[in-house]
Length: 294
Length: 314
Image (cartoon, rainbow over all chains, first blue to last red; front, side, top):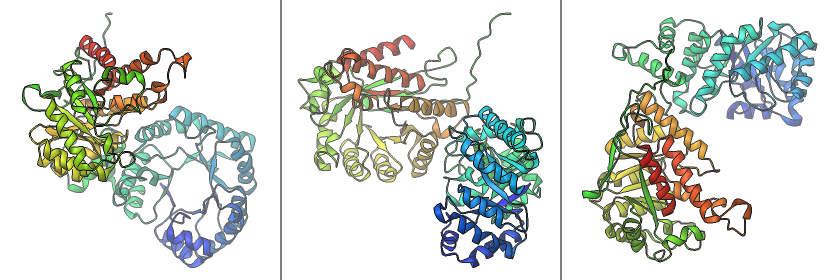
């Protein structure tokens, strides 16, 4: 599975301040760390960035390309900033993150993707907001892929569909809908790839418990064919799982998903945590902040 | 081929919790099936209705329809309590400590507790004391109330994440029953039960208050959350949610706009008294179907409607 490092983000205290101050050093250090962690893209999340977005992206892209040779994901809702970033990327093919399935977003951004032969994340967020189930996800996906490929002649392999990760503590049922969508994905959008904002699964639960939720979620999504994920570049265990280096843990989570009987007493403490976490993500146990203790 | 009705598979049981002491004590919970699904298993205790008494005269806040049945006792909470039990057959009472509200009368905790004690002493049925959902004030009041009512096994509500340590400890100390209250969210309901368990509150002394939305004001959210709690408890063996549930219907129904519009205000909505009574009754029935084991109600006619519904369903 390919990984997109999410940490360069305007919401981060450290990197947000560096972006505002145009202080390249911490941002370049982070880029080097992401390279060391083996990220396949570095996400540049500058937020909506208002009037300064264009200038900020024009400044940021070369600063990052100066220190690493990794493709960049241009993460902003600001169309001008995306256009500026696409122009500024010299080393690798950029990834637009993202294009929603809303007419005004597609009209503005699909031509840019075509013009620069860029890749893009197609976020399944429609005119009425988040899809309610897998069928609405399917309909949005089909609409976006049709417009990109048939209307603009963009090739399917440039498209990364994001079915939207929701937090386990408020919208567990939507996780099941994403998994159902993934079963249909190859038929709905042949040749397209997929990605997801993985860390949102643990948005809300206590900070120190976020990694295990992210790790189990990636195991489940990986089994459903997810091609890539936007992840925390510091969670090395997550990266190892995504690269298939912890097959026993994956097998254990698959057993939970398949409803197999699991002898909890025969497991190590750590294995039990993975089983309990898989159960809350899959809705077999109701989530609570103390899910690992009960 | 003969028709085969689908059958729900159950694997859990709601625990029984007893409120009150002596011959009038009432036990709720105990079911092994969804409410009223007696064709699938056991529902040993019928759902119960608790009638509401305020610790202050509510005349300025209540519509005529609500005041009429209690017009002779609204200024005397103990007499009001006796009337609910003697005349309207209440098996359980809820005392609303409205006078304690820091945004209202802000009566000192000591005085509030004294009035509560008088009401509790005036009746022999179980009593639940309901706070104002202000953590600091509720802690102050409930510390005194739990002590003064020692031996009566009263219920204390709401016990929330922000005050469960203090109020939970007071209930533990004086052997009262905790009503764990969370804001219409099944995950938070579970978490609070876990925290109360860690504090030492026994599952024999724990009832869930998932927070009630009245008809037209979020009833469907409460309904779904109650259903989800019941599903987890009865079909997913969720040990932490196998507790009886209360729905605070009276307060939520009677404060909404449509229950307070007079005939002159809204002739298109029909008879004001009948409308409000039916709103209260339908909210209660809806939540009983969703899984409530105990509903708090105000109007005797609405109480009678719901009582008759329960007896027909059992």
